[in-house]
Length: 419
Image (cartoon, rainbow, N blue to C red):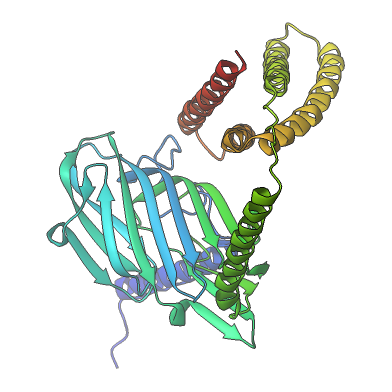
């Protein structure tokens, strides 16, 4: 047998070292991926991070807001919507956008601000892990411009809901996204059937909220490029006879109501009475508005003091003392406002929605404050660049301005009714 030459031997050694290096890198990668729902854009990305460290620059689309809502009805039917606000991050105009919907999605429709897309503008392809929906836009999306799209669809309960026993159910939620999406804000909301009780989930939700007979489970995440955990298992209890019980309950209430009206009218005919309706006191509204505006002023003072402290114009000691006093005052105002809000809503139904609107706006502002703190913390940990931080803070500022405009409008309407 002929002995290998020195050059052949060197080639074999080089190939061996290359194979060992690839195996080592593969092992290191498999140990790096953690069992989380979403990955950080800089540590695990689907694209290459640029020289300035920006995780967004190599993605075709920046998705400002992605909201997936999944609703289960009383009979196990599943309807869902995906809404995105997307920016063309490329340097050229684009006409194609892709949605990735859960597998086995059917009855798919897509619409934008101009209306619903026809079948000729959509190309739907079924894959094992997702359903791809290619959308040919009605107008070209210029570079750095944004558009909003909404996809509505149905999911087969047999593929997504597993039932054990009479009332134990497990919903499996599938998540996936196009590789050229960089997502700034993501929200997944699952609304359980009326009468169901949430039990547990494979990933801890951000919020579990109960309103009347309905329970919604919410997940939130910001600034990610990959979905590491593509499935979420959500356990709940639901008694199937509730779907029959609810109509019977409403029927009973209706019968009781009309019966009460009937007997009341008969009694009024035999015993004439004059009942004077108690007028709604505008004093409640006046007290509420005054206290609400005082609380807003104090919160503005806190922000101003914090800014002065950051610039060194106010010492940390003085800031802590003043903040403690202001926080105590705000706490007392919160309690008084809560009591007044309850009284106003109970006294007149037309104010219920306005009280809810203010409450919702307050919660949104608190959420935005938390998001700002998270963005600052991530910037300090060098997880995001200065440019990414600036974009996030600008967007949070615009969102806060919209919420504050809602508050201003509601307070203005309440003032008009005082006079």
